[in-house]
Image (cartoon, rainbow, N blue to C red):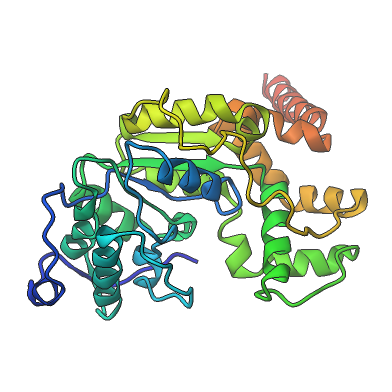
Length: 317
């Protein structure tokens, strides 16, 4: 599933005259984080929102390019006048029937001289047309993707879906039931990082696109934080208030029990994607297939293919 909306390049200013916001900031986002859902995006938002070089919107996930910001989430309590302005403007944008890039850009005027961006994991489902238009309209936009092992990511999404009532409870020990839920378009379309990255890289300059890994968030969150902040152009030595780099707001949330049998079946379901990630995303993704015993399988499969080719050439000779 890829989201698509009609576009408009220029719109009138009537709505902003009603809001009467007066800021002198650069009217554009500095970056997008386009996923992955359950890949560490909440951690990233919290780290940036608490950093003195950033002004982050009071809403973590704007969902503008996939849902025109029409979500059921309760608006947060505004922290200051900048938040009030932002919330009024995004309310006006959500009433439009099309994507208005100019007015979307003006959501970020309250940042002033600080950095700001949009962290919406479901932007990983956007189609080529929208990605191309966004990248063209914001040529200096930086894009971040937080990749996670597809098996663990999908299981975390299923756990969240059941916990929040978005997915009906099911027998997590029944492989058939698990696969049925993995085939849900809302899960499946977010579960192929190699395809998501390839789609965004077609339109975003390599210097402005970065892949980071959930593996590194688990191993060394301070180093990952430093790398991301450096890429975004701020001072990684400045602390994010009192927030530690290893702060995890999701740590105590209930997750579905993943048995070895089901884990193996889910790994089989994502076997080709695990291989594609290892080959195309590189980094920690090179380790993912081996977690499920696929490395030797791929080696022998490749050996068999080469043997068939050798025998065919020998026969031709």
